[in-house]
Amino acid sequence: MTRLEDRAWIPEAEAWMVREKTKPLGMDLETRCQILGTAVDAWAKKEMPRVAAVIAKDLGYAEPMVLEGFRRMVEAHRQAHLREWVQESRGQDQGVSKTGQFDRVVGYVVAGNVPGLSVLALIEGLLSGSAVFLKLPETDQETAPSFLRILEAIDSTMASKVRANYWPGGEREIESVLFPRLDRLFVSGQETTIRELQKTYGEKVEGFGPRYSVAVLEAEPEAGLPSFA
Image (cartoon, rainbow, N blue to C red):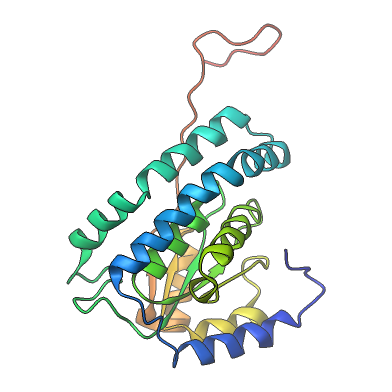
């Protein structure tokens, strides 16, 4: 986890972006699917329960709810489903080209109300052949690093194509250094934030608006808890 008082990572991240623009991943799509699918399975076995427990404790979420969300994420990103996604996306403007190779760096400002979104962004970016820079949300700085540790053990070259850092949103001193280096920036957040970033960084910014989450409540509240109409 990045310590906010330690700013040494900022020039390191900028230098990484510059290097990655000239270092394509050099793997075909089938190989990417295989590596990422293997990493997803390994993360589910080795890290998923622990990460779910940490997030639930930190945020006051119900651990079974977090774990179920992770299970659904894992199921949707196994090797077979990744191959289907690639086939559907190939040739479209969704990060995967007909040749399967983009030499560029993409960034994601990840929403924080749904645990695990950073892993989805990471997988999408790597499938496209891009290097991936993640701005982690304050509420989930555990999932992406845990996944990257698994990926590093499986394929260090692919893992080196990802950086994940956190800073409070709106810190222009940081964003003015890093965001211009990106070829594309995907942002989840309030419309005002997206418009401001688009005004500053132009067409490279693609906004998706807020991410919404849904919780399922039992019909009868637990004893002692208030009931709301």
